[in-house]
Length: 495
Image (cartoon, rainbow, N blue to C red; front, side):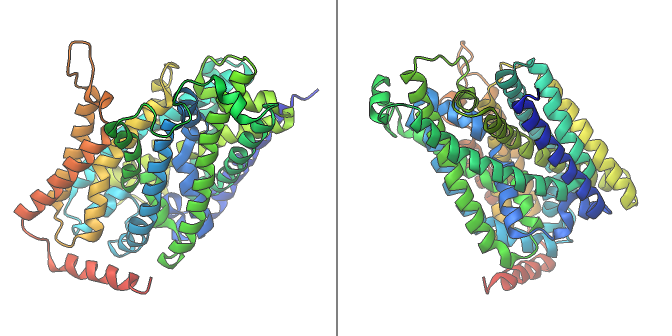
């Protein structure tokens, strides 16, 4: 007899591979198609692709687990992310779509930075590429860790097997179909995640067999309070996750691929509606899941598997299979986006610019596929330690991108007098500040500053100040940049 859990998972993986084959047939003829889908993305596909690649396994595992352990005070992450995502759609999305097209039809974020300063920023391009590869390798490893934990908790499979299956499946359809396949699979995966995050908390409430307040009576004091056990610095640390949106390449590259800046309001409405409901469902899953576990006297060894636990005990095996596919969808959607962005940076910003400027489109696509394999292999090695926290790995990579790229993106789009040297200073300062904050101990016990304040806050502030200061001390760029900036404003004025 066919096991419903395995059958559901197998069906899901077949659908993903089929979409990869569709992408191979329709949009992998040249590097622009392979990396950006030819800038023809429908706003609904772009919005759900941005959301699905953003949320990853941490939304179905990491965030519910944090709420399960700490209570509603952990929801400040969700609040900060929601605010940050809204302003990302408002401030970055339309300008980046227009600016990247006018600035030499840039297909990567490092390419945009270099073209923004008339192609003179070779050091800028190289450093931005290095930041992408380093932090995305770490970010991809967090997804593989989530995949390993999923297979271990849901199917009883060895952790290493889960890591291998997750990585192999993602690499297969990313390698085959490129950006279009990744975006279409993200759309399907985002839809699955949405249904799952609405369904699980609602059914869990029904499984409590009593009123919610009774089930929560065993919770510690303050568990149900948003400000319980928090300080101003603590709230600032968690809510400041929203700052990271402005510098996440795997998210903002979706804005570059949407077919027109005029489609951005539609994408924003779809994307924010999806996000608000899904992230509220993730918080509710951790909260009511804690009530369910306490009410039934159950134990949960790993809080980050609360969604998986509820899916297994509350639903028919076929529905459980669908819900577990939602977890895998969240994991795979982000990994695929990160692999593709890393690959595009290695191909466009390193291989073509520094090794083989006259490489054919066929060669570039081939190099892009080899780059996917290389980054995936490094992430696989990092993911072998199953004691890694999913949320912890994501937090470090999120802060790295947010601080290194966030101020640079905003200043590049909105400040005409921002210079190439200022951009390089901003990126270096942001990245270095984050790394020092995470790894340099401040006492003999090895305590670091990140245990006091989330590293994105000092990193973002330091990067912004460095970018502005150095730009004011260096010469403004050429007249061409001024004219291009004016053209971007003019293109967006009716919006």
